[in-house]
Image (cartoon, rainbow, N blue to C red; front, side):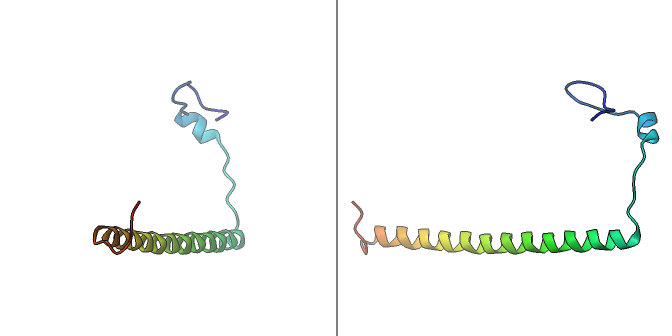
Length: 77
């Protein structure tokens, strides 16, 4: 944001962008970074899968609860 111009929508022009230096990690570092990202992505995907299963179970429980209340199997006060 140091080189950006403007208040509500900061931007950078092509000349300033061309003057910037970008550090590119060597191949070994790239492999380490990639492995770390894959590991984190896997953990995130596993968590999403678990949460989706829990949501499904809660929806099933809700349906059963409503059915039991409507059919008089449980008392609702």
